[in-house]
Image (tube, rainbow, N blue to C red; front, top):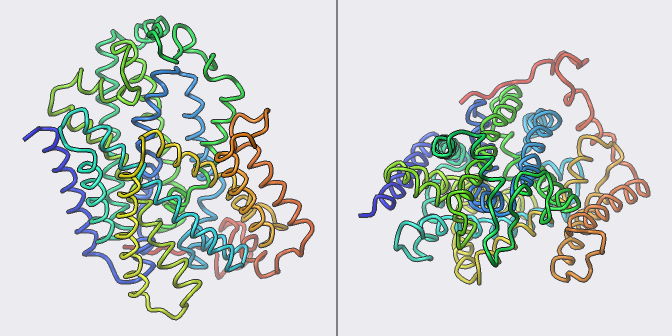
Length: 513
């Protein structure tokens, strides 16, 4: 059997076993299934948070963009790191405290506590469910992109194998299995990058020689790429300053608004683990993102006329490494797909069983029933994501859907998210109005490009302006939140322990596994 298939299947088997072991520690409670009993240490928090950031886009799409349009793509690198820093510095401890004191387990929980409204909670939950089902399909396409280079497995075989593996370990072990497997995936991702960067630099004769050769690369005939010194410029003929700013806003605001990333904080066993976990991941993610720039440069110099830019990283791996090592590194690329897909799957299941059914339809339902509904949702979402992948006309088309949804999430959610902790005047009506306008206006400009203003390079810019404007205007024109809500989010419990006046809450408790 093909060595690449063997290594891939062995890795999937390892993840499934890890998920099964996680299920042995599981209790049939919503707290355990959705947030792992709030028991994860800083290393696992770092692993699951970091892995949820990395996806097919990081190792396939982004490296392809680096390959074709140069290091101006470093702005996307900055747009990925910025949300990590913001979460660590301004949100992690607040997220964790709300989770600990008020039993918040999801982003809709957070929004519903701050902006009490069943309609808002339902609207937000349904949007997450829809967006993440499409997102999972986009992730699974990354598996085929990699395996198609080294195996004869059909398109749908690759999709189904990856989707079923993610379903099995997520279904069994819930958030604990997802956190454990995410961490395992991150380790192999880092291995893949370190090995590939080392080989690229060695074969190039060092970093200086690589940069020199990269800056002299020409543009193949008929390719809409950039070449020469433009490849190492901060902006170029393809990525103008306005485009750079637009894409920076898309990815930074989109990442800051993604539930599958932000809610990883809820898994932490204490406040210190929450903050440390998010902060720790900045270093390995820097390694991965900087490594992507180096690998793409080496690919452009060594393989200057690839048919598809998505093959930049896989081509370096296959052309430079022994088969067994190349197989492990390619599995590292696939690991990025699996980790993001599994986190999206558990969040989607939570939206249905917990945020919609328990919180909006049947508050008296047993926790076991909620978990069962979530498991059924996982199966249904997996089937739908496979069908979306099947009916997708092109890989580019489905990734366009995902990036569009990503932008809509940023425009629709970010104002309300900031208002949760940093504007006392923000209220339920402002939240709902902002979400609806942000989502619908951004979606409309994607569907009908003629609506996009001439000055806007990307729909997220006017979408965000409309969303923020609606949020501020409605908040100022309507009644301020109740005192109980203000106390919940701005009172003693939200202050650092040393600044609190109430001795009874001077120390934040710890839930040990």
